[in-house]
Amino acid sequence: MPPMEALLLVRTGQTPGTSTLAGRRLRSLSAPDPAAQDLRRTFFDRQVALHGECFYHDYYVPEEIVSLVNETSDYIRDAERLVQG
Image (cartoon, rainbow, N blue to C red; front, side):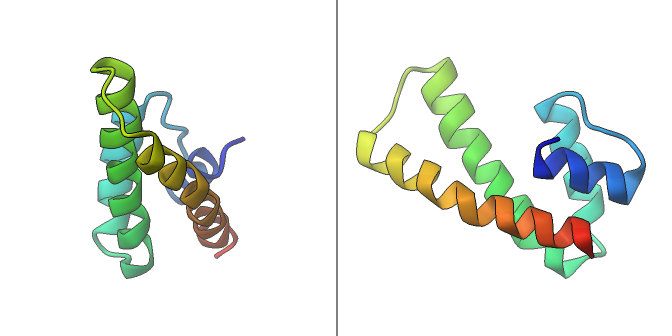
């Protein structure tokens, strides 16, 4: 299970199913939890750049995408830490 889904399952009892639901649940989860706020910002930053701009609008700057993808390993580690509590 991907770390974000695991985090949401552990914290809310439900898996998100879609990126829209993941975003909604992550917003709710992060409101009272400062540790999750950076994760929420990173999630939405990646969602806009990789999903919105690249996938839907076929717009990307290769160097920026490489950087975002490489930085995603940090994001995954952060989500895993929050899952473990």
